[in-house]
Length: 204
Image 1: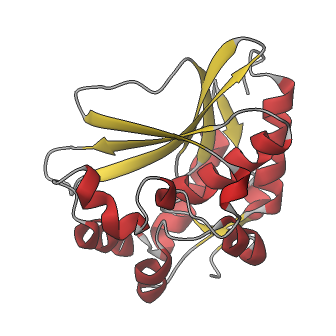
Image 2: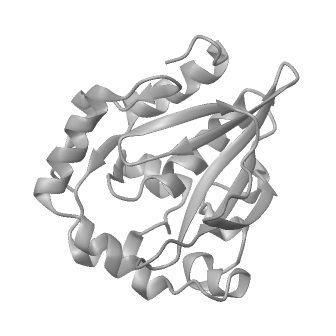
């Protein structure tokens, strides 16, 4: 990980990685749980889906920062790419010692960059909500943006179709892809907090 990532942030993210397994999900579990789980549910299971970690890791990260008396901002960004269903990214922003940091969550790692989440040619719409612990640990990341969570996102971004997104992740939850993604954690460089390989298991 880059040395310019604050130690307090690096330690928090490392702790989340050590306490959370990335696992392979069956299609029916993708349908039931994709980006719909609360802090309570995630911590209770100790696992996240390897193919769609951003919402689960995002809400755990926000809670960890809040416990350090840091104001965590949940960031929801919709992404449109050719020949793919509209997707979204769940990120977290935080200010530490007067500097802004953006935290992103990919299949194989947690990334930390100095700055904010910004619009790009593919990332069209960005929404922000302040994480509030008083909302309770029964609230999911997406429920901060719509009371119906995943199923209400079309209200925010009309091109988003949750059924197509779920089918996309069902296809990605394959054993070969799980192992391929796991191996990719060995080759991450730069501003990356590694997903410890010992915390991957195909069971889920």
